Image (cartoon, rainbow, N blue to C red; front, side, top):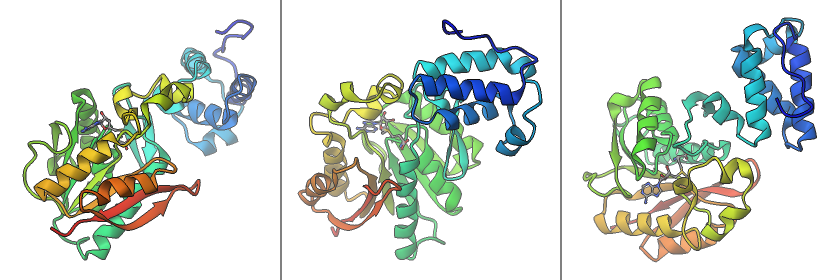
Length: 294
Ligand SMILES: C[S@@+](CC[C@H](N)C(=O)[O-])C[C@H]1O[C@@H](n2cnc3c(N)ncnc32)[C@H](O)[C@@H]1O
């Protein structure tokens, strides 16, 4: 335990542990102290929010040591999802390991826009082929295949370790038989044609990475963050590769806050035009749909 902090005892109640965790996180200046304490305790005890709040008198029992360890890790700024090893995304649970970006709620905007684009093209009940570039934990490809039961796809990543996590997540969701996982840059060597490419590439300008919060800077893989000097390197690769090979005529990509003008310019210079955008809950344009007529 951190200096000055009492150990968690087996006979300590759930309510008392929750109050102590919330206080410790608050005193350490963590933004979402109460939320973090609740989600951590639920995950470590294997109970839902209702049980947590309606049975505060239950003892924490043999979870005491796990709780103490989790509190130390959170106080060292490790994100809750990394401590628990899982993250909820678009209503499903995904494994998260140190090899993958911790999936962000904002990325659900990409799923929503991709489904809208597929629907507006009249393809939602067709056997569409989808490519996910830089799949990480596989949230985009696995969610889209789960939402579109006739769809199949290819997911790529330069990180072979990330691809292993993506495969496990696809298996957990029962969609692995409809997906191929390829360790490559962009879509190199994937062949074939796709009805839609989705991607949430690394887009942080290299110089901004040291200024990111410790939850991101110290725990997300650098490969998942660093988008080169202006943050646009992987967008350039995707824009050129997809246009040159004619591999797909529709793209839905995630962008960083404030990047829409620069990203549109990158894609326009390779022949793509903007179809529509979607904002995240914070009001930032987060997902961009593009098309190309070859
Ligand atoms: C921002 S993370 C996104 C992961 C996941 N799609 C998500 O939304 O949570 C970007 C991912 O792209 C991968 N990556 C980086 N450059 C790449 C490239 N040129 N081609 C393919 N994958 C790349 C990284 O290894 C990382 O897993």
